[in-house]
Image: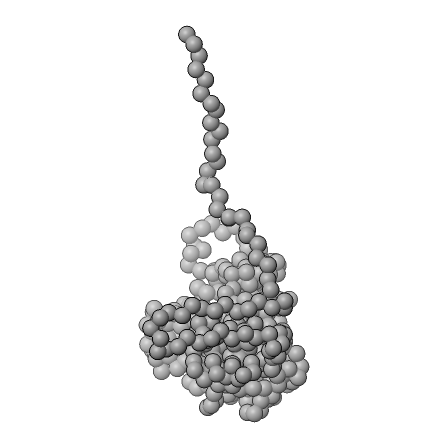
Length: 378
């Protein structure tokens, strides 16, 4: 029986239990050189396992580049419907200045009107980052952005972490709404109170308030009446080093450790969000960023984050000739006497010299040197 026949025999007896359980069961009855490696590659090439496997480990955190100043890049997102209300949020990537507006609908026309209002106050930005919501990727929105010379950066579908700045702002504002429990009548009052508090509070990554970096001065609040005015500083503080240090700390404590790279024309498995299996095969056609790829599959060309891509394992051949494989005889079931286990015969190719290593156990404390007793005659 060949190696592949034995692997298929193992898979037929214990299908889809996972590579760990398949190895454990196979070791109890079978043996051949590189058996664990063969079973591992068998599970990686199983079509059913590839299509319905879990998500791969998260990739190493890849931070957005630090903007040169306010208005360079903004992140936008929607919140809602929340208690029959919807909101539009804009956050500046450099200053962390937050802008929130209650909207009556999520159409492109309404979104463009809110962006015009924001640009009329703070100027037209250079880059706009958003997800793939219908109102944010429509032809009307693309014409508006291109006519103003704005580069539209769209994140990978079904990967909200790519637009983390906007997602964090949405989560913070939603927590505020949950605690204050506003109604439709007083929602504007609560939004104004939230924005004043948020934009006048020191941000954890910049170590400055959003107002200082966005306008060059602090916002005056009721707490400022409690201290003597000593003048204001109009200069804009440079916080690039502090932002980079914060990003380095985020990368150090980030739980993802998968630094996976893919090349053009490489065959991969991508996460499927439509009907059918969880994973489908595809081909890398373009590298958009260190963590974003364009992949061609049977459903078309789609954008995927590296966390939504798995490596496709090609066929594998054993490095040990099949002639050197020795099978242990299977015990007879009818015999009540326990048969001894036959160990595989060592061949020149598989012979390994075993050395006895020193015990790693060490004394818990140093031993005191004891001198011999001396008896003196009186």
